[in-house]
Amino acid sequence: MANNDEMKIEGLAELHQVLQGLPAKIERNIMRGALRAGTKIIKDQAVLGVPVDEGNLKKSIRIKTSSKRGVVRATVAAGKDEVVYASYVEFGTSKMTPRPFMRPALDSTKEAAIAAAVDYIKQRLDKELSK
Image (cartoon, rainbow, N blue to C red; front, side):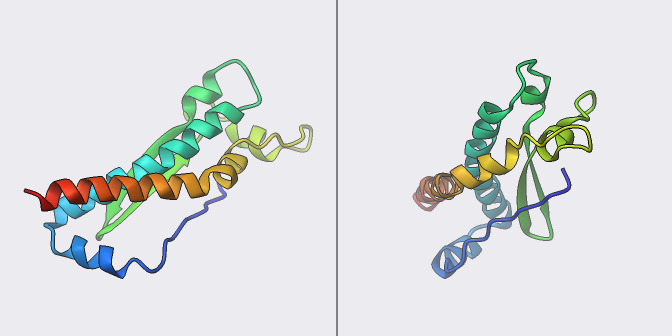
């Protein structure tokens, strides 16, 4: 979908310092896991909000993570291959009113998603630092 939203959490200097003390691969894996934990909540809500019953659109909602130059990103996307109509449902067309499911999912779960990411980081840091 063309509309990208990013969530940034400010004020985590201590976390950054602890992560810098870990090997880069472990740091990247912790952040990837945290973003996946948070975006899973958004994805699950988006699946519940899909306004059609046939199932292909629901099945097409997925989480993608990537890492480039030390920056880890996660996205929740809908539509692939045979489900090219995902953006039509979300944003509407000249002949169809929008029936958004992705944006409402983000709006209603962003705090819970951040909390899930923070919980994941805490658990993984405890595990890594106890080694």
